[in-house]
Every structure is written in structure tokens, then in C-alpha cells.
Image 1 (cartoon, rainbow, N blue to C red):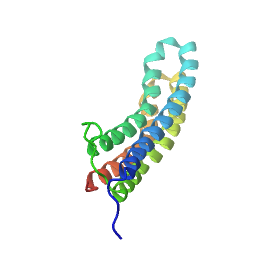
Image 2: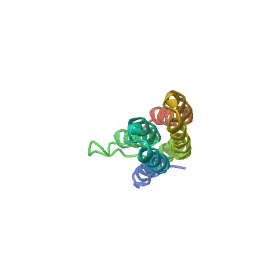
Image 3: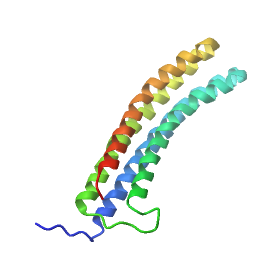
Image 4: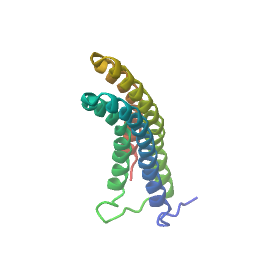
Length: 163
């Protein structure tokens, strides 16, 4: 069975994949940063001198949105959308690109939310004792590991899809 190449479905599916990575990563980050920000506001209100430490912990869940953006950027670059010369992508290639974005999107969604919760708890640690900042950062960074793994799997999949 011969596949119709120039229907536009392939490119549409690839762009949907980019949207999945960027959208889910952004949702995870925004929820995570929001959760951490709520806790940080409480700490900074009571102890304004700790704002710098609070800000670092609040920023950590924001990286998941960056990972999703990078995968979306790769899709736009490899499909030729960024250069203004979109490639003729088959439906099968479009599906491959779309599903390649899923690991990053899902990992960043959940990792961002949970990293925000861990960062918020870490702010409680530093509110009681400044010397706990290193431990709070390590605990929060452990959650990030899974966003990095999702990003790497998606990036490897995107790089190995032949267009």
C-alpha cells in the first residue's frame, strides 16, 4: 500500500508533537513554579533576607518548560518550519515525530509539578535554618532527573528519525 506523502498530515502531526512537548512542559513548570512561589512568598514575608535563597528554589521547577521548548524547537528545525521551507513529511514520519515528543512532555509535566512541591518543602527547611539550603536544592534537583531523562529520550528519538 503506497502512502500519500504530500497531504500535510505528516507535518501537522509533527507540529502536534512539538505542541505536546512545549505545552505539557510549560504546564508542569507553571504549576511547579506557582506552588513554590506560594511557599516562597510566605517565607520572604516573614524573613525578607532569605529572598535570594527562596528565588533559587522557586526557579528550579521552571526548567521543565525549557526542556519541552527545546524539543519543540528541534521539531520545528528538523521539519524546516523555522527556515520557511517545510519538508514534505509522510504521515508515518509525522507520527514518529509526534510520539517522540511524548516522553519529554509527560516527564516534564509531572516532574515540574512535583519539583515545585519539593521546592516548597525546601523553603520550609530554610525558613527554619539557613544552613539547609544545600539539602533543599539536592532534594529538589533529584526530581529534575526524570525531566532530564524524558528530554534525552525525546531528543534521541527526534535525532534518529529519518526525514
